[in-house]
Image (cartoon, rainbow, N blue to C red; front, side):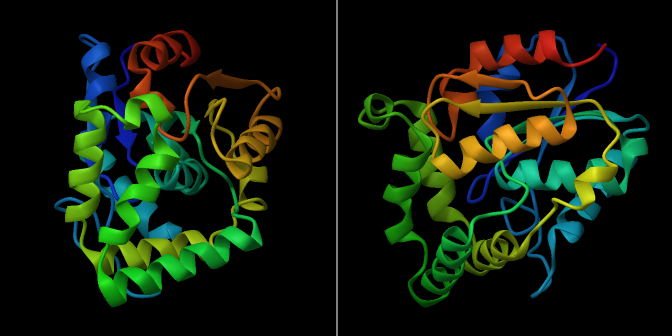
Length: 240
């Protein structure tokens, strides 16, 4: 496995989201970037699209001197899709985790409402819904470090950066662009993720491969709730 793994996090997280998975991968070289508006990365321009997020990642991969296996969850999965189409020379393969090519209209409206909430009153009221969406009931009820990290990172995310990212999610539609995707692609989803993501995984698997979805136990953050299983999947599914 000579190509490194580049991990792209979900909305309201940062690169540290992937620490439990990276710890399982031993000597395989890995890096996790902060997406625009998250962690230490600057906010995207108002009105920026998913292409701006992919361009920021492309700039960082370009400095590595080699193509990478790009692993993206949710928002990060949308960035991985766009990157694989726009800059295929930088993508050895793509792993799309709990993500969609486009959100249903009801969720598009939800993202716009979340953007408005973030701008008016910050992210505090959105923390608990995030935890309930990401983690199983049993794990969410514990003092597990992964849940604590998710809570703390989400609460510390810049509200305007979060809002602008919500607007990206509301507007994105990659269905037509994915017709030109040529990079090997693996699709992963949690058994108990929300219907939009389970349906999106099935669509992505059919559009980009042989229709195989690799199902993991858990909800939206199945990859970090079950890092050993996810790391094992990466080792076996990513092309050498």
